[in-house]
Amino acid sequence: MGIAQAIERRMTELGAVPPPLLLRLCQRRAFWESPFNEPSKFRRRDLLPIRHGYNQTLYRRLVAHALIGAGTLKDVDLLKKMALHVYRMIARAAAIRLTELTGEQGIKTLQSLTGDAVATGQVESHSLAIREAELHDSGVARLW
Image: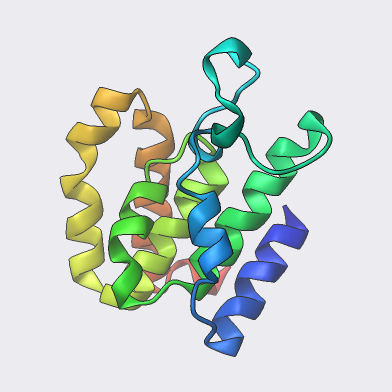
């Protein structure tokens, strides 16, 4: 997680735009779901391009945090989708970035996604992401 968060911070510091390769990777099904649950239902093009399947989790995190760190106002839709990610730390980071970019409107946007979180079964992950975004937006998180 430390490496993924460092990549996120660096992408933000650089003011980098989301690299097209990473944007293409997040369109793959294996970015959002684990192929280990039902490997037979994944096509080769749905998998992440790594040699050893057990590195999927790390790769997914690195890609996600790089995209989050490079996210701009043009990437709000992607950040909203990532705020519903099954991985809590990805959802949390996306929610915080969304509020950094849009302020109070970001919190309202996250709250409006609650129905989607219920539909996808990501209620816990999403509610924790909203809480962290609110703490970050209010400045409380920076006091600790």
